[in-house]
View 1 (cartoon, protein in one colour):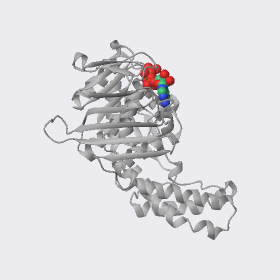
View 2: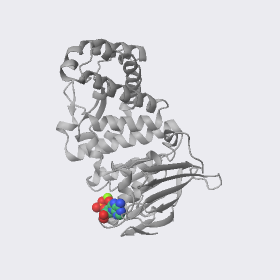
View 3: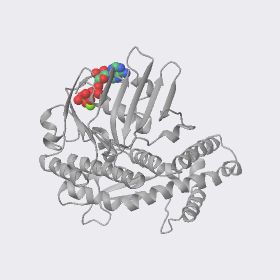
View 4: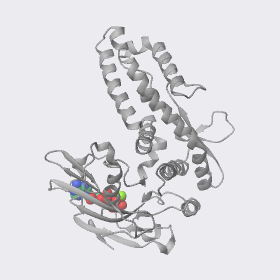
Length: 376
Ligand code: ATP
Ligand code: MG
């Protein structure tokens, strides 16, 4: 899939403008604070209906305005003949109302509109996926799986809802049987979440290591699912449910004392480790250099793109916000090679300086941005 056109209205500092995007993509060059990241944020909004930077919707409405609107026109990959589609999203500050339409009609549920653009975003803050705490990696898993695994969103939403109620009950000091009334639902939805996470991490760990090795030119790495509930060998839903039930039983006293549910997928982690002598591997979080962490973060995004290719049979649009800035020459060069080898589709990348654009050399058209205005 590719984005053939984008129409913006009152999105951050981007004013109102329409651009047509070339099939191969574009490099957007501009000084700091001119709107480069805002432009990628607008595009990626059409994939997840939220800011990749974690901003609230109202923060993205241009100062002094009430409504922002982003409309993307899509085309089938490399084909101008096939009919394209349209994804549109708008948000009104005053009424706190979000409106989404796919090919002109509003979906029944907001979640039906997720994942319609097929895009992956690489950004400087991705380093947090490696350096940050477990919640960063859980959020990454949740986004990837919500967008690509049917049924994941509803299992996750159920789990979160039931967990809240169960915690409220624990906090209120309710009797054991009152708390346990939530267990069936918690275990069912939680096991589904864990099974999907386990399957994804296990099946993609090899690809993660491969990307890591190719960018770092040698040294390997791996990703390992570390569920808070020891699931053991049996990775079936039934096996995980049984393990979760046991873990809840074992932690009964501790959760009473603490007033919260202490085991479950809300406490999961994914370990990112350097391959090495140690049996257990060295955690990149604790032992990785800046460049190694950045490489691991990049590898995670590449695996995300691969997931989209596999699940949706579409090459995702690669949105790269200033990615080469912190990589050494060799690594940047190998990322570039890898992107070409993988036959990526459209790329939209940003950089403050022309010389930072090391991808596809001269092939990628250059656009400039100044004070939110794009010159194509
Ligand atoms: P850098 O190279 O530093 O990353 P950038 O080009 O990516 O810069 P952006 O983050 O896209 O910069 O844009 C930042 C600018 O957008 C800031 O000047 C900020 O004041 C402005 N801005 C942010 N939100 C809004 C908004 N809601 N309305 C108008 N302007 C906004
Ligand atoms: Mg930026």
